[in-house]
Amino acid sequence: MTKTTETKHIEHVLWDFTHEKLGVYGCFEVTLGLGMANDHREIVDYVTYDKADVIRCYEIKTSYADFKSHARKSWWGNYNYLLTTTEVYGQITGHGDTLGGLGVYIVDGDGMRSVRRSTKHQLTVGERVAIIESMVRSMDREEQKLYAVSPY
Image (cartoon, rainbow, N blue to C red):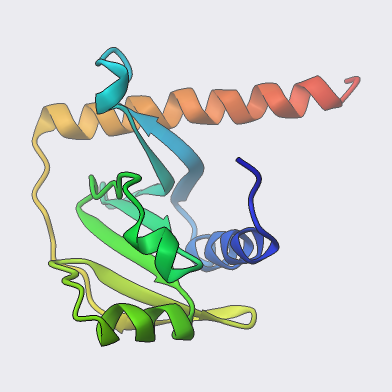
């Protein structure tokens, strides 16, 4: 599926935000659940792993319909976040949708601001390993794309 211009913009803002500090490693479109049945695989929009051993998962929603879709929203990290616009966040809260322990970031222009804190989720060793392995596979996929377009 082709990404909208707005989604691409939010990805760039998120990348800049998460890489302001050294020791943060991130990857877009991380497929979790490899080796499982196809109906158990999930794609997390963006995952970071930092030098403090913390995993954060981010889901980007640029419309209320996207938020309400039946596509899985993957909340696998120690901290999990929804990234959206002011308008979409207003629709989510206006309709009384529950966000559980999710943190919420609003993307405005070239910056983002926190409007809701995420609660910490303790991961098992197996979950942590599965997420990091999934990140490595996804990072390799991105590197293969880069080498496919570069002659050297």
